[in-house]
Amino acid sequence: MIDLFFRGGPVMYPLLVCSILVLTVIIERLLFWITVELNRNRELIEDVLELCRQGDWEAVRTKVSGSKDFVIRVLVSGILHREFSMTKAMEATAAEEIRNMRRYMGVLDTMITVAPLLGIFGTVIGIIASFEALGTSGIDQPQAVTVGISQALITTAAGLGIAILSVFPYNYFNSRVEKAVLNIEKYATSLEIVYEKLEGVQGASKE
Image (cartoon, rainbow, N blue to C red; front, side, top):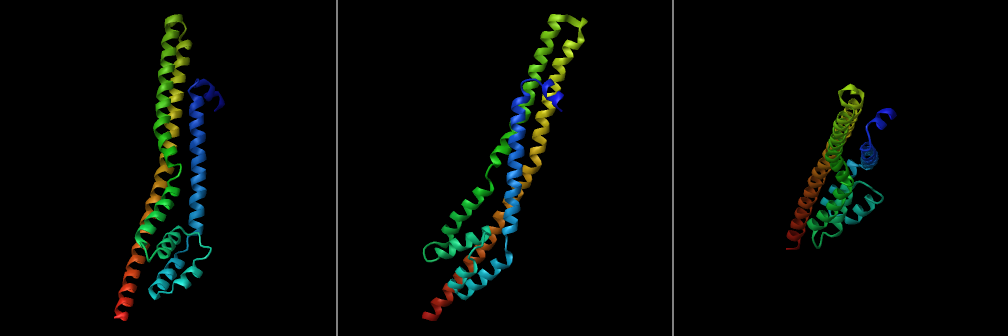
């Protein structure tokens, strides 16, 4: 691998930086999603909705204390601002949660595009070197030409390899974000319905 790296020419250095960035982001996002999954508490969400049906807001506050579930954080934001604008409060909190989930995804997206382009750039440099060697030494020394061609192929393979290995985690992380968005929408809508029914019941009882 080290021999291939040096044979790839100067473009291999930015490609090395790209690969380090990709690996760092993948590890960081994997740890992030593992933490998110460990903090999920679906039973607590159902308990919170049930307490909301009863209008027991103090019990909700006690119940969710210490929870790190992102759905709970969105619901709690709506509950705290229920007398003003529950929907807008949940939207603002949900936007913040989704922004955290999408963090560094732009790096992976950029590397998927940039790495192959760097590989092609290295290919062009290698081919130029091959033609220069061909013009200098002629066809009597084919090894001088093959060095440039080898450099061209190595950089192309490296760029494509980085892009291909970035696509799979990028799509996986995006699917996790989409699933999280659906979960937030599902429970936020449930909370809004519960609160509207509770308000209707309380309004009828006052009359």
